[in-house]
Amino acid sequence: MPRLATASLAGTAIEFYDFFVYGTAAALVLGPLFFPTFSPLAGTLAAFATFGVGFVARPLGAVLFGHIGDRRGRRPVLVVSLLLTGASTVAVGCVPAYDTIGVAAPLLLLVLRFLQGLGLGGEWGGAVLLTAEHAPAERRALWSSFPQVGPAVGFLLANGVVLVLSVALTETQFTRWGWRVPFWAAGALAVLGLWLRSSLPESPRFLEIDDHARVPLAEVVRDHWRLVLLTAGALAVGYAIFYAVTTWSLAYATERLGVSRTVMLTCVMAAVVVKGALTPVMALLGDRFGRRPLCLVGCAAAALWMFPLVALLSTGEPLPMFVGFLGALLAFVTMFAVIAAYLPELYAPRVRCTGAAVGYNLGGVLGGALTPIVATALAERSGRVPWGVGAYLTGIALLSLGCFALLPETRPVPVSAVRPVTD
Image (cartoon, rainbow, N blue to C red; front, top):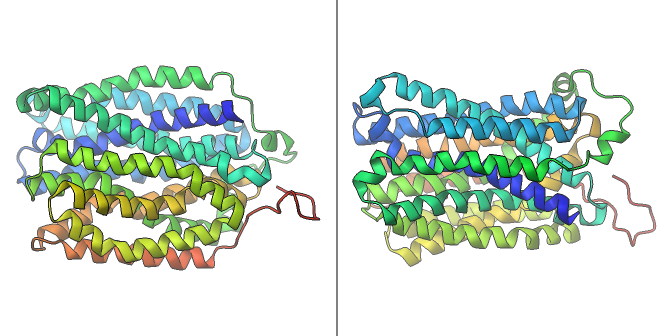
């Protein structure tokens, strides 16, 4: 389990590095470079729109790779998705700007961002299921939480590289070529990920299936459509929180409040470090008290914290901003630390890869694709404190709270109980 969990963590970290580095670039430089004929606000919105295309592609990737995972095994998904995401990320770093190739530049960004999302849509399901289906039932949330640490590591890698370049380069150097370096680095990381995953065993649960679903998506839509919609709605708040903190806030604070890029990246990264470190701790609580209670607590905390978050952000001061980000990400991790165990447990093994991945990535469309765009538009119409953004995020939290309330508990019977442990 330690070797398997480490390989899954490393793989998800690399794939989310690819995904996050685009979000950081969209917040900081892509607008002026690829949409120079737009106003600064419109350029930022257009850059965030290309960012959102990746989320739209993720459910399609979940369908494609979920089919492979349910028909051919979880392991092949990990290799193909990593190759696709890594190659498209390197290619983003090679796209000439608008002043060189004109309208073809933003169009190429859209295509490559779509391919990024397609690969990441398959990555989560394969990595999580391979870990969850190997793990002992009484510690499934703990072991499954390691792939969930991967996004935090990937974010820190992406923003750490950008932060170093921001400090080391002049503004002109960073805008001209420095922002491309993190994209090029994705190639080396992809090779590392493939090496780590080359010797992973196939999931024992998959090998036990005698009758594989012929068309997994059709079976999920026919028999589990309500479950898919509930999980998508439940997870929307996690995506909304994370991308409000890690993407929208960067653009808002640097453009509207005049906070330096270095200060913003440092504040966000510090909060993400705490979030990543607490993920296994929250997962242990999920094994002890159940998945659903933690999700309900996290949603309620998110609903209560969104207005303080925007108030603290609007100060433009490092410590209050850090506190705002930390509170939001603590609510986030309370939910998402157990999601990697919770979602697979909701679906039968024969359609588990498709069902869990589609529900997870549809939540990304609802919460992640729209949040930077909507928040940017709402903040433009607000005064010093963007209360409209707080209201929007609170509304999503309440929606997710209702969806979690309608989902069942899935925590397996502990080994100390009289009944035997079942999957």
